Image (cartoon, rainbow, N blue to C red; front, side, top):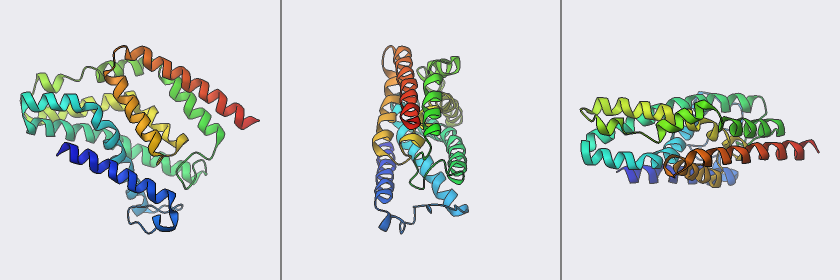
Length: 233
């Protein structure tokens, strides 16, 4: 069931990306928001897009935890953990939707959902890079790499949900700025969505992730300098 859910989320993203590349038919898709002048329906569709995208990108990174929880606590506890985890990322999706709307209204993001401003792109890259060196990033990453509270204390589905939400909150704290990179590359850029999702998995589970994180931070800072320099010239 979880595999079907993740597969469905990625199918939705592929369909949305296809609609963005084929706007002649994409705008007739009921799940596609308007290009500009969003109303409440459009905001709801954009929120759905962000929420599904976060589920598609982040759930694979907690599969080891979910599998262990199923083994020791049962499927009900695993379901509680997943619900709590997705609620945390749902809160992030609300914030991302509002930021997306504000950037679109300010003409800093194009109707194609990608940055229309060199300073914005450079700033997002710089912030993402510098954040990799902060104590907050390190603290959240440590907690993301040790998500075993729900496994060690699976006394009820409610507690598993609480642990899932708590773990999701640490994941948001660790990864929120990486998701902001989608405004630079394009919110519906499937290649970057896949790259960021793969990086999140590697950062969580690969040995020596702290050094890996800092190396990526340095590359992002360099990219910010290059983007700003090219834009200025």
